[in-house]
Image 1: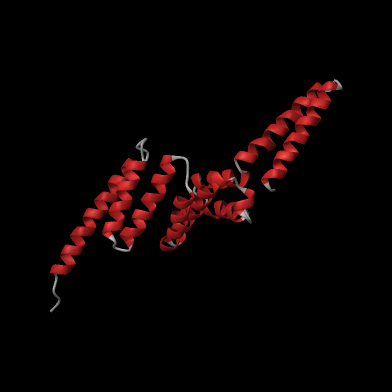
Image 2: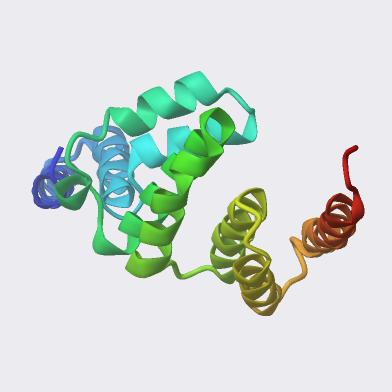
Amino acid sequence: MPNILRLIVAFALLGSSIALMIFGHWAWGILVILLALVVFVTFFFNEKMLLAQYYLRKENMEKAESWLRSIKNYEKELLKAQHGYYHLLIGLIESRKAPMQSEKYFKKALSLGMTMDHNVALAKLSLAGIAMAKRNKREATMYLQEAKKADKNKLLAEQIKMMQGQMSQLDKTVVQTRGFRPR
């Protein structure tokens, strides 16, 4: 449902609840006010995005992907502030199936912008992992440093340390393979 239609429905419900209360139907009026609040809240938080996030936390990727794919035109159905999060969620799902294909979604999420710093850090950490898989150490180091800066609440500190450890292991394997000469 387009966002403008949600607002129209919410205000229509609010008006009808006021009319119900004026005519003495207090119980129905309160119930319709609660319904109007639910519709109004979905203006700011799309229910499909909320359900996709819920299933991502439960690690049910199939259902999370189906809820995200049910958003046909994200530019009309979501607020502009949610566009980055939409691409971040698709990138997280895609990274489980094809990690190299998810890079475009993370970059798009960063370009569209996200308000929460830990989500920016998550996107940059994912991009660092993709750069490491491509054996691009300079880009991976840059993304790791940016992720460290963006992770102000230290929610991803453990993952960043683990990634830095893997980066040092990457250096060792490069040195070992260059020193090895087959006979």
